[in-house]
Image (cartoon, rainbow, N blue to C red; front, side):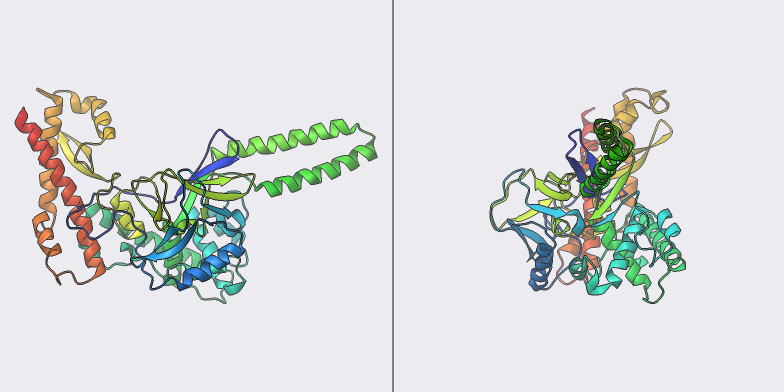
Length: 469
């Protein structure tokens, strides 16, 4: 049975053999990028730099010992960033990484607290998935070399430079009220979560500082995958089936009941368990941190598939692109805006095809959100919303589209006026050597320029439409 998994998500398909996984990222609207002046490459990894590839060799040796298969790829350092490179040609749709579930860190929605000697079981059960995963990660880390995922933990970044670590003044440089509010809420949530974690510690021998907790949370939020729950591993099902066969055979012998009847009952139980898993997959989600797989960097222009193969009890990866030997291989973390990427990964993409910037416009006296895409057009969802909003449409004299266009122009101008600097100011700063003093200043500059570029593009198109009418 295969279940599709998103970097946050796994989605069960009709075929009972594979589930798709997806990246586990949440929140926000985002912005686009400016190719001429942005230093960020098109596809990026998290904001974590590494000095050499020596640690990669140790990590990959550990992965091989754990049964991870990746013959055609290897981890390497590209431009100071970790990534996965093809050591042989990789074909379109070809599986190039296969990871046993036993080598992953998994939050199972039906599993009892696996670390009751570390935290209170009732507290663990009530936690959100990402706090649970963070607790498991901290629990495994405090075991040291005895942890089953020691090699994975050893190579995780010591920090990811996202805005949750920034000062208020540094966050202000992003010039995004929406993102600033999201980061503020994130900081408050994480602080409260840490206090609850400390109150519910069972093992207080090993100290866990707030920095330790943030380390776990940021790795979990930037590296986890999720999807529809795939049920218990097939090995557990087979063990149960074997027990049923033994017990059923003995019961038939002792009770003089026809073995056929007992076997029919056993088959019914097995079928029920499989159907139960299918039903659960549409209602519950599970989450996983997947060594080696999460070393693949993100591109907004690729289509990839990360799936859980039920009968093999493994996670597998493929993409709809082919790669030649020596090329870096990318996957998609999903349709993430630059705001989402900035908040949880610490980077942005130039020309991000999934970028959206939402302004609030007043149409016929009614405030409505208008979402602008990376190409400067209104998003299809926005147009559908406007077409179905009778309150907005009624009483509009003349063309409704003209009224929306005029409202869009006013809203964009007001949004640009609220920014502390203009796009021209930012471009001068970007092109002035030595003026940008830190990596945080640079990514903040890149981010706000991407937002203003998208707004300016949309304003230019809207003004052209207005002149034609």
